[in-house]
Image (cartoon, rainbow, N blue to C red):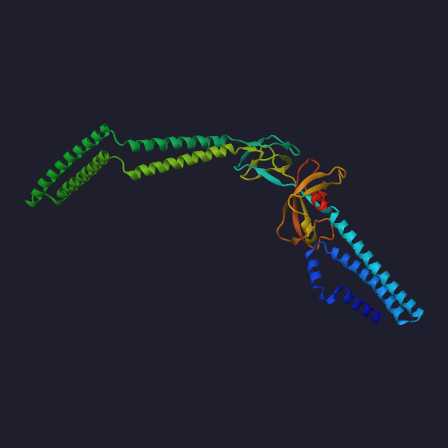
Length: 408
């Protein structure tokens, strides 16, 4: 048997120049070509060719040497055995090729769950719940009024804010316009009166001082005159400064302070207006009311949940795919979605997102084969959702066969 194999090997080298140890070119081409079953089939066919040619060579060699007929018959039996083995190899390669092609052409089946988002709806301000317009299970549309609070307290706050704005506006206008001539004349008159009072007090103090120097006046009387003179002098100085201010007008810092006060009052008014608007709760998106967490008359704090809303658009399917199947789950790939309720009428969707990083499979995955693997998360956007798809519902996904690839 060993001698026969060596003869076949030598014949292979002589006839074709092919040596198994130097088959770097064929291995390079095999790695470059996809799928790899093509090279396997070629090697199998070549092996069959070698065996057939070897049979004829051995038969010829035996006849030339004059070997006995029973020895030639034995060699022919061995050659037939090798021929059978070669046929088995070719058959196995062909079967593997068929299986590989069938696996690649077969639709990819995945398992996932419906992933419908839900949001908690509530008022941004607190207060007494005046009324509810929807109940659990109701379908709602964007902008629909769902509930309302008692708005009377916030209406009063808005009125107060408006009054503060009006007062700040008047004060700013007064500072910007400056003082009227009548006001300036009045301040000038006050200055003249203060000047006269000071002149009299100062004259009286001088007389009292002379008497005190002559030792005819008590010290207490002199001190009283000095105190009166000082008071009238301070009043005169204040009147002069006031007249100067009226003549110059208001300082820029005072006008800036009035402007800031007006801006603050306007901000308070805007906040009061916003709070009043927030006593109405409107639907942000289309959906279905899942739960109602409050009743009319309840006192609610800001942010308390009143409704839980299930969003009906968009509807997503969350699924997972392992690394070997990742190449077939490309974004945009069409998907058929089957549920237990309608197994013969699939929903339609497309792969909208493929996670860039691997993760361990969550426990809620249906197939036990994937639970211990590193997988990639898929998000399938359902194109034709309806009420039959519920949060968390298990579904079966079939990736539609890529026809362009199949035609190739």
